[in-house]
Length: 209
Image 1 (tube, rainbow, N blue to C red):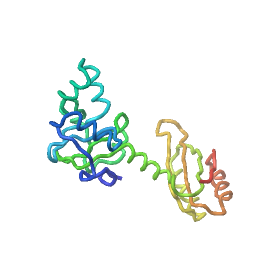
Image 2 (tube, rainbow, N blue to C red):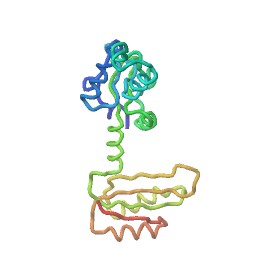
Image 3 (cartoon, rainbow, N blue to C red):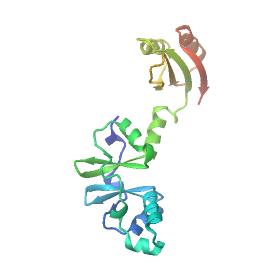
Image 4 (tube, one colour):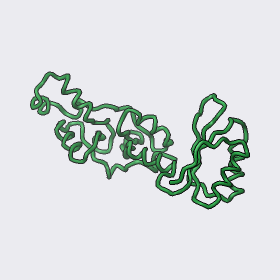
């Protein structure tokens, strides 16, 4: 999956300009219940404006609130000028970049194209886990050996299961990998689980959504 398929496009973003007063940015954040805004000059990306960095600048300024607001521009508190995603970056890169930040810009050259937000990331993770689709969620472990996922595929095909999601964990040098499989509801769940166990998968939990 690529960033371009999940970003909020430029025309749907609230933005501020470098020469806007800090009050303009704060008002937009409050009005639209946002944590951060892209800073642009026309269509050129300039950085990110946030509550946190605005208030940190105020704290260290030694000025009164009124004096700070009247004398401070967005350009004085802009951050992440060089932190952004490219339009064809894979979505996993957004997970890393959003670890400590509410939004990240998507840029091509210097042109601002849109943003990816933490909310978007959460939605994509929910989709990956099939959160909103009813089914059976089976958590099990497998020894990390060649062909185990292929064997799982054979069992799924044998029982004519419809897979909603399949996620693996523990990408380390450990010999055991955890797998979470969600399948559509059918009346053969017990037979399917027994087949998994018979094939060497250790079933930890079976739950119904």
